[in-house]
Image (cartoon, rainbow, N blue to C red; front, side, top):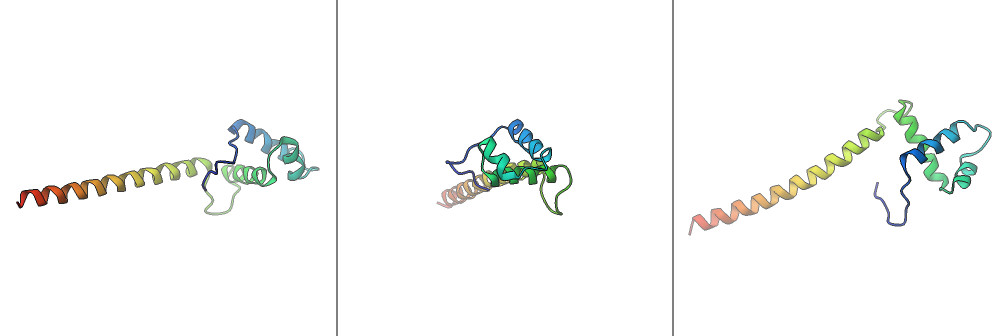
Length: 101
C-alpha cells in the first residue's frame, strides 16, 4: 500500500498501546478510542487487524508485519535487479556492435 504524503506515520509503540487500549476497553467503540487518540478510526481498525494477524489470529494468507516488510524489501530488490539487468543488456549490445565494426 502506498504511503501518501498527507498521511502521518505513528511509532510502533504508539500503535501497540492503541491496540492494547482497544482490546482492554470492550465497552468502548474503536471510533471513540480513535477520536480520543487523534487518529482515524480506519487506521486504528487496521492496526487492530494487523495485531491479530501478527498474533496468528488472522485469516489464511494474511501477512504478518515481518512478512510484509520482507515482501517490500524483496520487491525493491527485484526492481533494482531489473534495472541492472537492462543496463547490462544495453551495454552488451553496445559492445557487440563495437566489435563487429
